[in-house]
Amino acid sequence: MTFFGNDTFVRRRTVACDLLDENQLRAVVIGPGPEFEYLTGVQIDTHERLSAIVLTDEGKATVVLPSTDAGSFPADDPTLTCIGWSDGENPYSIVYALITTPAEAGVSPVVGLGSTLTADHVLALQQYPLNTCLAQEALAALFMIKDPDEVEQLAQAAEAIDRVHARVPSLLTPGTTERAVAEALHSAILEEHIAVDFVIVGSGSNGSNPHHDFSDRIIEAGDLVVVDIGGTIASGYHSDCTRTYLVEGAPCSQEQLDAYNVLLSAQQAACDAARPGMRAEELDAIARDIISEHGYGAWFTHRIGHGIGLAGHEPPFLVAGNDLVLQEDMVFSIEPGIYKPGSWGMRIEDIVHLQADGARALNRQPKSLQPYLRDNPIT
Image 1: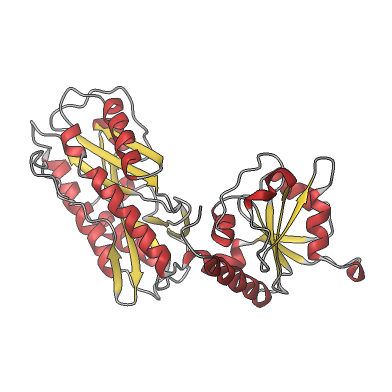
Image 2 (image 1 turned 180 degrees about the horizontal axis):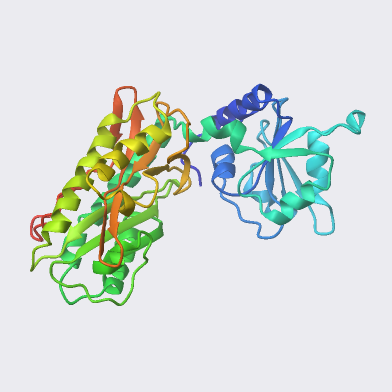
């Protein structure tokens, strides 16, 4: 099932083929995954058998896949050819034939390979006279810059995960465990999405591990709890949002409160400063500099953000050393964190849509560290 009309995918493939010509690539070979789905509207998994869409600089689009899966594509689409292969055939020779002609014997065209092609397929293709590179290098702008329909789906995904976050305060009662909270959040995410991507519930010292999962640790009054959750909605687009909660029954320490105020100001400063034309590393530096100026720089151990779309993590990556210029209609996270080793952690994450005049936050849940009223959740 696809949420977009076929004309959307025809347009995307046309733009992709034009980008190949501009970047002097003969073709790209894209395996199953977000890039494949973006270009075809089809989610497919043929396990160890090769499936790929081959786009050429001449504007041709061909899906090569096992004959057993050929029914996944309409037979009457004049813009997309499907070639099925049977067990015992060599699918890589089919791909190579789509890229070259007999008259080009001895020529090694430049071919971009999609990021989801596994090593066995990559090595098999490299047995042919091809110069390979990452397809992402030529197609990055196509995948990163979202069209209005994509932005709408990402906004819906953000609203869905916000509704789940609104339930968190009622779950964080002293005496319960991280696991119990995570199980409840898993069910809540499925009420709002079709799949759970991840659930992080990091209380107390566990919060100092940015990618802690959850454990049987008993949550205590006054704990800081990092809750980072995400899911996939029916259109295939992802949600991702982090809030840090204070468990009712005891105050946090002055050290924690001071750090949180710095974190909140750093996250808001980055959200306010984001503009088309700035470099990804500049946005990372805005939050990082504020955190470092207050003495917490060593405790901010990851990049400030990542793109999101049909993948939960995708370019652009907002990190030191990335001079990528941010463009209008990119959608990405802004999520600085401060983690005192072995003691506590905190993170604030919003997904934002970069517009001409700045970043629009798609997540709307409150960021205050004060305990939320269980009888008055934000909706």
